[in-house]
Image 1 (cartoon, rainbow, N blue to C red):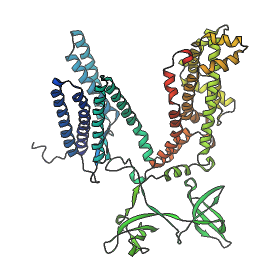
Image 2 (cartoon, rainbow, N blue to C red; image 1 turned 90 degrees about the vertical axis):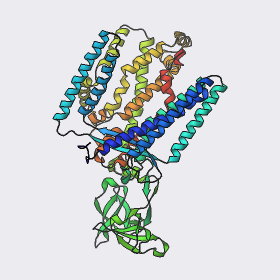
Image 3 (cartoon, helix red, strand yellow; image 1 turned 30 degrees about the horizontal axis):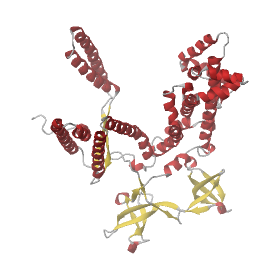
Length: 586
């Protein structure tokens, strides 16, 4: 113990251990709720054992939560609990060491439990391979002088009443399921309910990244990182409208768009020079205009709280930001000091904030778009053109070719179909250069044609899929249409296509998502901003605004919403595409 005395323990290690204990504690708490099912459903002589198991789980949950919570640093906000989060940030070599260690331990355990000598030797040989990987990874990690291991720590804050209420809800739900199981004389009822709860829980877990992106898109910069963990509920600083007489804000027109700015110079002929403040894409530009074309508008003055000279707490809004960093406040509260002004150091002020969303992030993200894109509408228009033409072209061309391969008899049909399937084995990188040379010879570079015209020439996989569906439709339906005088095209349009609507819907959804998220195609063929789709614009926006996660997440959410809408309104077709059966896939 002597050499360890006075040595500082790594706080990240303590946080990691506390996080693990806390998560295990909540796991045993949920297990305790689950074991209520065994208590309610157990027969009389098994009930004492079920109660003991429930008591052990509850005791473990309480002990782990108590010890784990004691190892975590306290929150600044009183009256809140935290679900801690910890993630190690390590180089690839360190991850290989951990993976190798896990696999080595599992192989050694399997060798110890082997049923015969042959299996024992096999597991030992596998263990030797993983040991070599660990040794090589350790050498790699030691040779890299720049590699270091850090960690990301945080947590999800919530009120104790939320946790208690959730546990009570689970207790009531489990008790209700057990009673329902007894009433129906079948344990399958409660099992089905539990399955549905598990599915809902999984959906919530997978929805967390989107919820985080949505929450981040509505945050102020100060909430992007917090020592108390992730800020899920955003707050905004209170503002008040203020007509600044010393440095007024004006609104006017500049190059067919409305801009806001301040006057930095006045001419003798009645003209003024305006420094643009918004939109952000042209901030800092100056132009000359007539004085009568300016319209004075109020500013959004930020509200702060501080201490008056007598120690009294006051609230006020910023009148002027001085050059030395100080702020001049005009008091709004209390009434006795209203409209008085004083100057404060930034450290003496606290922003007045309330729960709310900073919707301004969405407007600011769009205002960063180049003027020629009309606030990003040009990107949306280009994307819609690619999506609509891509979906229409894919459905029409693929269904026509699939119908021909499934219903029409012509020489070499099977050979041509085999060649078509063989094209699926060609990697996209192989055909990339020939396609580019063809489109360049046609003069289609920096246009949208290379991105939607190929859709009208069919897709091998879609043709194969639709052909199989067409072949599953009884020939009697088509024969009946021919007796009624239908041609091949009439039979195709009026009889065959309605039978495969679910398959067409699935292909349309796949094509829509592929065209909406296509980034490689625009990267290769598009040069001009006015021809870019949303996927390419998002990548450029990320490069320009990496240091502003609020604006970046706002732009991401705007690009994701149409795809989410398509999924929620057409999700039944995803299921139908998997479970098709019966006549015509119905």
